[in-house]
Every structure is written in structure tokens, then in C-alpha cells.
Amino acid sequence: MTVSAIAWVPKAAAREAPQRCVLDDARFADIQAAIASRIHQARADLADAGSPSPADAPKEPANPSNAAKKANVDDDFVKVFDLDNYDNDASPDFMGNAGMDDEESDDQSENEDEDENADGPLFPAVKSLAVEHNDGFRDPNVTVDDSVDDAEELEEMMIAATDNLILAARTEDDISHVEVYLYEGEEDNLFVHHDIMLPSFPLCLEWLNYDIAGKGQSKGSYVAVGTFDPEIEIWDLDTIDAPYPSLILGAPTTPIEQRGTSTRKKRASKKPHPDYHVDAVMCLAWNAQHPSLLASGSADTTIKLWDLSASPAAAVRSFSHAHRAKVAALAWNPVQTSVLLSGGYDRVVAVFDTRAPDPAAAVNRFTLSADVEAARWDPLHPERFVVASEDGVVKCFDGRAVGKPIFTIHAHDGAASALDVSAHIDGLIVTGGDRATKIWETKDPTKIRCLASKDLQVGKVYAASFSPDDDLIVSIGGGAGKVVVWNLEGNANVRRAVRGADSSGGSSSKKEVTALEADDDEGDTDNDDMDAD
Image (cartoon, rainbow, N blue to C red; front, top):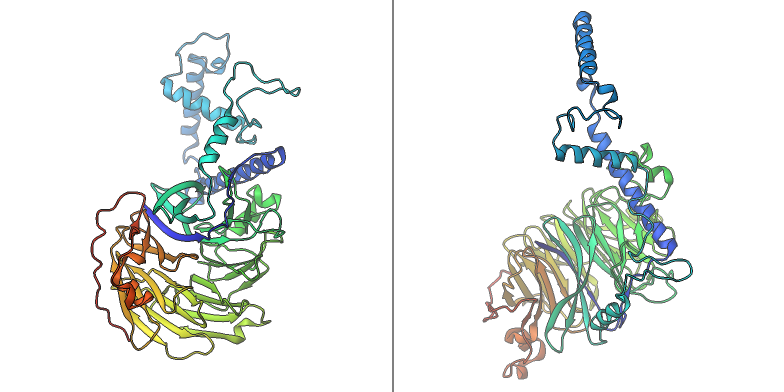
């Protein structure tokens, strides 16, 4: 079990009453076509994998006379057992299933049925088991009214304006999905609201406050998901039980590609392409100031910009100058909204303006001592960014010019795989690595302190994120497949540093750690001494 990524949905951003997916004929036909496309692609891949090489091709017999003798023996065998009439209903059932047991016979029948329906749809065009005629007459044997149960269930799934949603990319037993948690901060309650099935292991999540269906005419609540597949799926969070994404970026659109011919094989090449990714999508960044703009970074070493209001088949721009290895982190600057921050497995952090005609000529490159794990702009100091690397080091730079780091923290013994910077409290940073989640005070670069360090029982920490609404709420996920909400109000050191000395005497009535299951290990927080330069 693993939680590989986490994202928050702000309060009042989700629909109060989520709707259940209703498939009309057009949408149902689109889904069937998409499923058929994937089936044809899988069959083509199997055919490619099973094609014999020239070395495995059958060879001509060395002795023609021996081949002739074998042919005569085969003819005699056919005549003795009357195999020419074996499939004839009128012929006697001489050997039952011709020596096959029942299971082998059933398997053969199933294979024949699959071959006969190879070009047919995966599912018949039936959207309900109840028979309903054109005149509105329903099957009298079906007396259960599903609409009553659906209404009661949807009423239980109401989302209050004071509730947050937490999105977690979770994989268990090779089954991947996005779990949508509802966090009731007033009651310290956390539970799974609904989930979304995914076709591949998820690597990153990004929440979008953009109406995909209406092309930006209003606001919406969607999640973009990057996986080991090169396509980017975008799902509607306000719709329950949606069978297919609202939008797929970089998916094949031409009939030739969908049918699995040579053009599709070219698309499977790992050579970077200007229109779409050809390898896993490792990071995503949505531009809140330009809501139709989404950036993606891939293992194919490229960064792509997508216009959500335009065709999803091709990116509007592709950047291959920033990195020479996998791109692992992306972030838009909160003030200079066309400036993009990127980090890769080439130990480089790049800052460049996406509007520049030649971004390669005006890019600031910062070299690190290890591969980049995460990178964030400081919302309260937008000229600065913070980056965490594989060697457990966290550094802060001024992105306007290449120079020495503003500060360096030796945060973890292993990789610092999780990082976030508070948008509410100046200098407050959360990092995650090994099994520890740590809170740092960096407002004064000469007096950096670790305010709290805690094993939250999530396994190796892969994701950590501050709440967009509450200044001392952090969500964490890791290798144990658990999502935990850490309320820093319950930690005396953090509360004293943030609220001041007057708050040290009291204690918060809120739970410090909220999870799906009650945790008994909410003891005193150990404050580890860390080297800070």
C-alpha cells in the first residue's frame, strides 16, 4: 500500500450536493469507443509480443521423404477417427470431447466466442438491467426503485461549506485509485467520501478550479492525475461513479492510432515529441491566475503546457531545454504567473519565463548535490523557492539570479521526498523523509529551528501539504497507504513559535493527529537537533 501524492480542495470549492453520473447515449457511445480503442491497442501489443522472430520461424524438413511419410500417417489418423466429420451434429460422438476434459472444452468455446466478437463492443448498449420499452413501460418483475436509495446515499454525501476535501493517490495490491477524503475540521473527523479508479500507478495530483465541461465559463472542481502512462487524466470531483475521465490530455485521437497500427507504434516510442508525452507524467502544476493553463513534467525529460479550453490531443508548447533527465517537480510563481520553476533528476533546478520566444537563452539554472524530489515557491516571498533533494538536504534560493543558497537544512538522513511552504505563516516549512515529518522555522535564515518531528505511522513519507484554509493543518501520506491530518495547534513548540509566548500556557482542545483509525501513539513530540547552515 502506498500513498504517492496528496492535494487539498479548499473549503466551499466542491459542490455541496455531488451528483451521480448519468450516461446519455452520446456519452455512452464515447466511452464504448474509448474502451474499444484500448482493447485494440492491448491486442496489438500482445500480437507484437507474440510474433516469432526469424530465428524461431519453422524450418523446412531436411529429408523430404520423412515429411511425406509423416503426412501419410496423419491422413490415416484422420480417416480412422473420422475427424473430417467431428464437428458434424449427425456424426456419432465417438470420443466425447476428443480427449479433452470439460474445462479444456469450455476454454475452447470461450476462445471461439472471443474470436467471433473480437471486433464487437466490450459491453452491449444496455445501461440498465430493467427492460424499458419506447412507450415508457417497464419490466413488471422489477419492483425496486433505485432512485430512492440513490437519493438517500447522495444526502449522506453532502459536503458542508466548512469541510475540506483531501485527494490521495493510493495504490494497494496493484489497484490504483484517487481516494477523496472528507475532512471535518470542527469534529476532527476524516473519512473516504468516494474514490476514482485509475488505469496505472499514480505519481502526482493537481486540483483544478476550472470548469472542464464548460471550457472555463464557470469554476469547477477537478483533479488532474499523472501516472506511469504518458496521458494525463482529468476527473470531475463533483460527480460520483464516473466511469471515464472528463478529459484526457495527450491521448491518441486519430482512427489510425486508435486501431493500433504502425502510427500507434510510433507513438509508443520513447523519443520526445513536441505534442504529447511519451513516458510517465511525474509532476503537474495548474496556473491559478490563468485557469486554463496546466503544466506537466515527464520522465521523457520534457515540460509541456496544455490549454484546457483547446484540443486535448496536443500541448500548446513543449520545453526540452530545461533538463536532460526526468522532470520531477513543477511550480508556477504566485506573482510572475508566466514564470515556471522545475526540478529534475539531473540535479538541476530551472527558472524560466514560458512566454519567451527562446526560453533556453533566459533560464536560471541552480545546481544541487542530488536529484530533485520536490520544489515550491515561497508564497510570502515570491522571489524565493525551496527545493528538497534525494540526499535529504533542503535549500532556499533567490530565483532572480543564480547564486548561493539563502539557507541550507540537513533535514533527513534519507531522501527528503516531501516538502511544502506555508502560505499563511512566514518561514514555516514542512518536510518528510524516512518515517519522520518535520516542521521548520526558517523566517530568520541564521536561526533555523526544527519545531517538531513526529513519526505519524504512515511509513516512509512521500507527500505533505499545508491546508489552504487553516494555517496549522498539514496532511501527510506515505508508504503504509495511510492519510493523516496533523493539527500543529496541539504541539506546544509550534504553537509558541507561531502564536507567541502567551499561548504556551494553554493547550488545544483539538486532536493533534486525525486518521481513519484511532492512533494511540499521539505522545510527546520529539524535537531532533538538526544541522542547519
